[in-house]
Length: 265
Length: 321
Image (cartoon, rainbow over all chains, first blue to last red; front, side, top):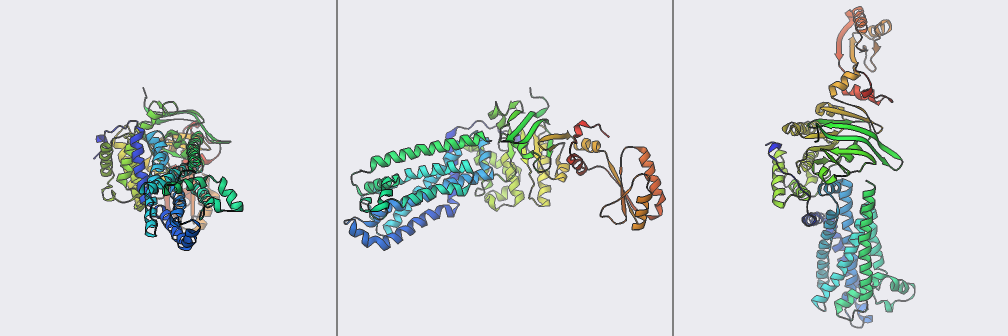
């Protein structure tokens, strides 16, 4: 066989099929990287078992009969989402430092479909991880108030996951550093513990209550709890504003990082 | 009209902040040739290739690939370029087939066309037995073949290879060189632009050589022409004793000097001057009874490279010897 018979001339690709292929490729990468997949699930289930095992009885007392594990689950999902969605940054750094993203960018003309594919694949993986965590919680005694409520709780956390993934990708593009991209996960993970972790914020006192009150993640966790239990969505407006702001900031951060990369080529 | 040159570079400068990596490079790359870019570390080889392959943008100057300016008509230029960067720029968790198909989709081929093209390239590079093996598990040589195959997915007119055989074992290197030569000769209009630190690789592959130093072109010609310009042949004598070698080195009219590190050896750099040759033969005649071996070697790319590492040397400004 000779190259003379290979008569293929590439044309400019439409963004959608490339994004779909990039999502499939990034998802395949996640599925073939056990550490990226297992860590968030193992971490979530570990926290769930330890916290519910040690505090389940006590919590049931001060929660006025509400299930402690149902109260805890949104936070557990949040920590899993923060860890899982951070994989978007890791995957981006890998493609950047190997030169593969440059190669794909030159083939297509822009890196956007490949970065979008990475974010989408990460969210799909995080969705699977979240469902497994909910399944694990059910084994540990969790019973959803309604299935719609449980899915709604997961949905809120996935929106948060999109923002974590966007910031991770932005930091990855700006720094090409895995450890720097990992800081995004660390920030969300850390902030998640300054909410009403084991008790409602109204039960907290002192500096912890002050921080939890101003911590936007408090309202995201609270909104997820209200959706799960079918209560009135008092935290909904604050959570919506925060998540929308965060998502817009994530897109802007990605745009700025890409602009910086373009300017410094 | 694009003429006989695949790439035309004029006044190309690339700066990173205060650091100038390429300084007013002007160069024409002949279509259908294998142009090898040589130079010491930091000479600007990789940057030159990255600018030509549109990975990086020039600070000033123009680069035109097959008639398309990489700044003003970058999309058209990119369709004609296949590049294999210095490291294996591949997805280590994917198989060769997956990487090739994905590259096809990125280039704008439909799924079916990408699959067909991938199959053709797997066959072309003999990757059949590795088609389902993850790239991370392939040998260095096979990985480099996949790298080259990926560069060819879009049927490029210009293939840019940055240090393509770094890290390969000798056998894999020889196989890879054969692959590159085959690609080059199978389609006479395909141009290869290759950077390397390996002078032997340049000797094997190059139809044209560009030597860069400190961001500028110090020579650009065919390997033979560059060797002729350096023009120095070396006469090496091995004598039966150190004493005979010292005696010759002291009494020489032609200018024999002891060979560093070689016991009982002397050597003489022979310019084109016949008087020096005659004097050398007289010197040899005087120690004829002690001569064990006489060797006359022509200039190599090593000599060319060594000559060009001397500051202020520009072979394109020198007259042939």
